Image (cartoon, rainbow, N blue to C red):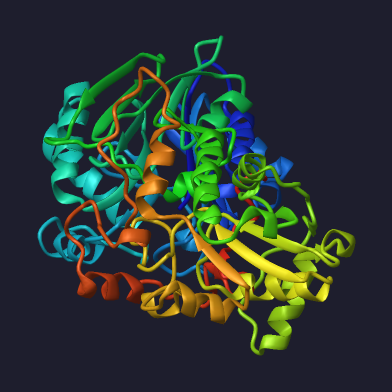
Length: 506
């Protein structure tokens, strides 16, 4: 999962792209990059680290031009330590193309072999985004055959790209001297929206909060399979380039990944999380009588809307009883459970007075490995709680995700192959309540506003094992995991969840 943005303007865009990336920082903290275009020349700066650390004044001065794009990276393929795999990626033919990508190609290995043997293109990294860039470049070269680029050529090339790629991809590319191209996979797994500023600036970005936070008016979401080409004059051209597009966005975006103030495919992320709390409340009632619960406590941060709604419906007090240290950086894999426990307690601290002598219901957005859940339950007991119940706004995570969320292999998922009672024993709570899959889907779908493209379903593969692209089997998952050769675990080993600062923090 990454955050991407592209801009065409009548004014310099370096500061605008920087500001946009700050608003997308929650989608990736491993690396950041910006490329701008002046005339037909590209200017690029990218490096590992957070946006504020990667770009200094001298770097910003070296990014002139009125069009450009940027990315914040969260690695799902390739080597997390290799700075060369930071995006954007560049090829010099045809025209000169730079590209940023959010998602994960499930057939990257096969495509890489095709590019070498048939298309005669060289891939220099382990990144599937470089593979995608070269597929796009090859199809543009085939379509134009050395003549002047026309808009129809761009759309014909994207149509051919769709035929070759499998997996999830939201893409923004800058074609030297021509404009910005954005397109989305035929299932719309990863989000992409566009808007316009009062001065005519056109922006395409992963989340609507990026548009709103930079003073742009949201216009619409890019449809699954659609391509949008913005020429350097700011004129927008669009075409549906996929044969059978379906809107099946990743449901984990709404559970955890996206900011609550964003709207993805017409669905308010905040309302979706409120709805999840409502359906979860019904599950809680069937497991633990509300009169046996003294207080509802969220586990920061993404669970807050669900916990608030759950407490309201059950008529129970809601308390912020865990305080998060916002200045603790990413936690790396550390040997020894004692060290892991220390790290969790550096991130979270319990307010003992809210736990002492009470039966508490803790609410989390999801449970992946269960390591954090077990530690937080113990923290609540150490703070004096009589009983500790745990509710998850998402169903059990039982299957790996192959579409851009680097969840661990199935054997590392606490719910894989286990009953809810077995998971409860591992975590150590007095009762464990999960959301159910169908209830989750209904809750998120109900948050879609009127007038938007109707949903055809969701990718909920990490919960139900159904991969919407229809091309995934255990061997494919094994190959995808082999590509994750970075030594750092994208899942926070000490928290059992994705190593992101917070879906609410940017």
